[in-house]
Length: 156
Image (cartoon, rainbow, N blue to C red; front, side, top):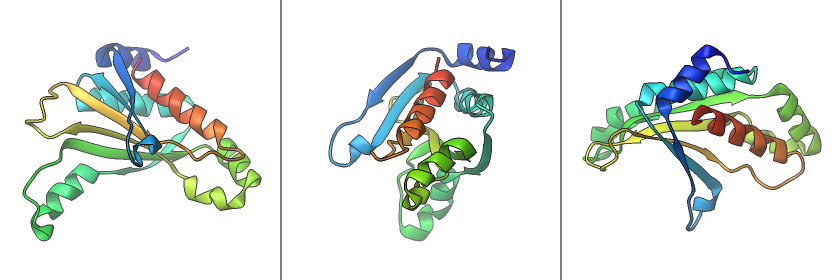
């Protein structure tokens, strides 16, 4: 049973709309969206990951990096309000995936992005949660299932 914290965060986040994007290369991205604050949705994703007994190895602050380096690359447009990528792994699932094909090491760690679009995108209160669809291959179905379960639980 989910902890009180996980249930509370899920209640705050509210209903989610699951969207699988279409277009060139976009079929590799599974994107969902929830309502709430960035912090609430991120906390719900963290709780869902930790609820599976997994540990987040790293949080990449992609939005901050893009804001910080924009002047260096001549960029004027802000892309995200907030954007972070959570990196984690499952020893059991990763082991099975790599035993099936050791070259699948490139799929570890797993990542889930949590982000809001920049102000002016007309998405106030909408927080996106996305991940790359794992490749089709031996041992990859469990990875896909894990990522899907984490996102669905977080946005419940």
